[in-house]
Length: 460
Image 1 (cartoon, rainbow, N blue to C red):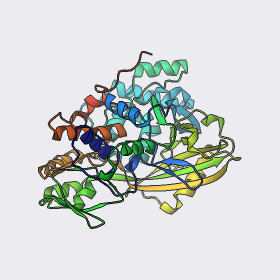
Image 2: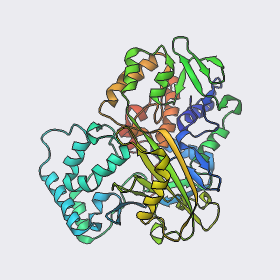
Image 3: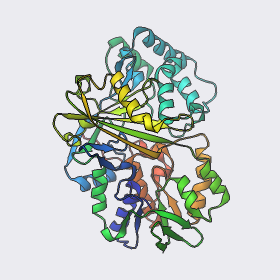
Image 4: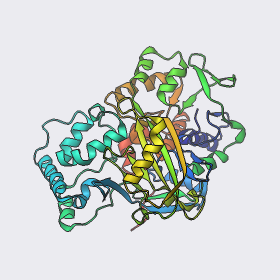
């Protein structure tokens, strides 16, 4: 169930293994899930958020090569933080020299104190970890306000098991050196070099993968509306009933629990404890001169309250095919919505445009020719304090009924929820079911994220 990267990865692996007795059901009319792309009426291409392609797996790289051949554009990452009316390169803590002097000193002093007096006990939640690791200066200036905008939940309610390679840890000696030299440090991160489809947005990848599968086994526009776990049957919105031996679900776990008749009460209660955020993506298509400051930037982070978005991508920089005319360019903003951080959906597009002007991303002479808005109920699987305990009850209960839930929201593990992780979860669960291997992405995420399965980097 689900034709996003996970479902397509599973179908691709089954096909490669010569197992043709499968069907893939997708509620939407095409493949991709949260990695699909849309072309608006004015001809601008949009993704459902700021996706880029970087990989922890040689096998995923090979799958991308087969999908699109050489139709890629490679980019050196330029990610920035807009704070105090200026751009600071990411990671923030490595580029404190860009801050106003008083705030630079506050951030550096906080780092010094944190390094000199580590906590006696391990932090219990993400908020305490930020304070203990970075000190009150960086915590107050960037990490706390930014993460509150991303997650939409109190940082004291987030656990720590997801961190892995998601946050750059401070190297105090290196930071002192950068501050003294006034030199930028932008080399951190697994996505410092990435590729993007030359045409069609991220969704072009998954359309190509779907096109390589037997068309008569793909059921688009057919949502599954009921699953009987005891009888091992499912029913689609069109009334079709099918039996199954094994069900690989990429539906969000909370939705899967709602559909599943016969799910153990403890598992249903565990699903109700999972936490998430919704996301609004606003695409702004523009005509006119793009600001010189945005000429090479990929995306920018926004920690301050006056900006409703937490991230803005200069989407036209990824591919000239994202815009309908050479004189056009585009910005794509992301806004978080939760019960703790409610938003007025009807006002979001206009609020985003106003903030983009105030943040100097849309210059006075630019003309807005397209405004695209999409809301996804499931945006981020929140790594809440109770997440791991809930998954430890829910996933085994499903597997006892021959249901294997994988993917960004199917596994509900943010640390392995990128497209490469999600695709590989589909591949690995099939290999486990065929007796050909285990599932390292779910079982050993830190090992996977360390690059153990990645394609070796070329020298230099």
